[in-house]
Image 1 (tube, protein in one colour):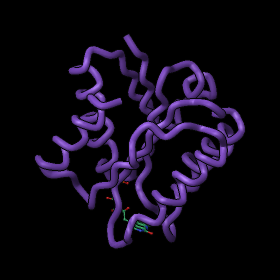
Image 2 (tube, helix red, strand yellow):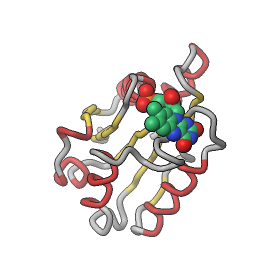
Image 3 (cartoon, rainbow, N blue to C red):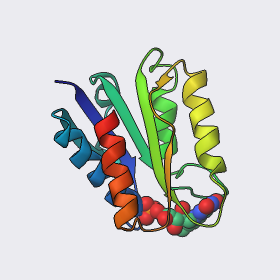
Amino acid sequence: MRKINVIYWSGTGNTEMMANAIAEGVKEAGNEVNVIQVGDATLEDAKDCDVLVLGCSSMGDEVLEEGEMEPYMESIDGQIGGKKVALFGSYGWGDGRWMREWQERVEDDGAILVEDGLIINETPDDEGLTQCREFGKAL
Ligand SMILES: Cc1cc2nc3c(=O)[nH]c(=O)nc-3n(C[C@H](O)[C@H](O)[C@H](O)COP(=O)(O)O)c2cc1C
């Protein structure tokens, strides 16, 4: 059984809905999952898992949320070399640039991206939630 930690930030709950649906998929596939709000996450939570799944909506001007998510990323940059990682998040009016740049960042950290970053526009609908569950199953 794999241990998968889902660590996320969400302002209005859209990325949180994604996190919970991804967790359902992980469980359906028979794996263990911990869903952790980034404000409660430790460095150990990023390290002590088989796959680290990070979620954050697109904030500012195509960046990660700066109060909690960006500092957490800074704390794990340099600590996730060789780690299997997957990224997800909700966005509004952009074209997903925050996700492309975030993926480049974790690859520069030496992490291995196991799935393409999953992005969903605003609140996930039923189809979006199904996509999230499939993403979780595939991890
Ligand atoms: C302060 C602020 C900045 C945002 N900046 C962007 C942005 O640069 N690009 C984008 O596509 N969406 C942007 N959005 C829209 C959010 O990413 C979108 O509403 C998303 O669904 C929020 O998800 P959450 O509820 O998980 O935080 C921004 C929203 C807020 C409140």
